[in-house]
Image (cartoon, rainbow, N blue to C red):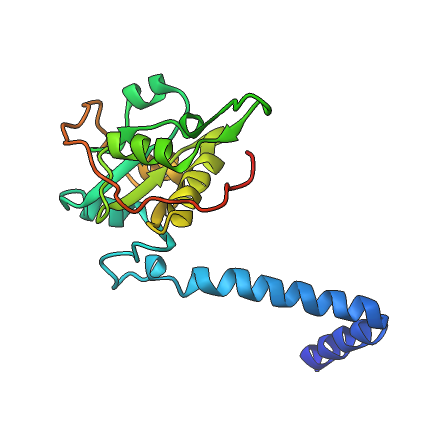
Amino acid sequence: MDGCMRFVGVGAMFSRITPWKGRLVAFVLALVTVAVLPLVTSPGWSASHSRPDLTDINVVSPQWLADHGDDPNLRVLDVRINPLAYMAGHVPGAVHLADNTFRGPNGRLPVQYWQSPKMASLFSQAGVNDDSQVVIYADGPNILGATMVAYLLERSGHGAAVLDGGFKGYQEAGLPVSQAFPQYEPGSLSHFALGTHPPLW
C-alpha cells in the first residue's frame, strides 16, 4: 500500500508539469541515459574484460592496474601537476606527464591546447605508441586533469582509461607504490590528429 501511495504521489507530481517543463524533463532524462549507459556498459567496467577498448575512454580499478602492471603494451601516465608528488610515490612504471604540459599561450589567448604534432610528441616522449594501452591518473585538485588527458587521446582516435579513485584510491587499496623512475623507450604515434581543437581548460 505504501509503495502504491508513493507511485501515485510521483504520478501526481508529473501531472503538474507544464508541457514545456515536460519536454525539458524528457530531454534531461534522455541526456542522462545517453551519458551514463556507455559508461556502465563500457568494457572498462567489466571485471572479465582484460583489455579496455583502445579507442574509447574507460575506467579501470586499482586492482586491474596492479594485475596488468607487467603488460609490455601498458603505459601509465601520472598527470599530477606537482613533480614532487610523483617523486614521493607513484604507481610502479608510471611516467610523470603533468596535465598542464598540454596547454599554453598561443599569442592571442593566455592558454590553449597545443596543436596535434606537439601533443603527439609529448605522448611519444612518455613512451606511448599507436598500440599502447594507456591508463591515466591524478589526485586531489588535479583529478579533472586525468579526464582531460584521456579526452585528448580519445579525440585523437587512440583512447585511454582513467584509474578509478586516482592515486589516493590506489593507495587505499593497499597496492604497491614506487619512487623509481621507469626505464622505457620513446614511443611513436603515427595517427595522432585531434581534428578540431578541444575546448579551453
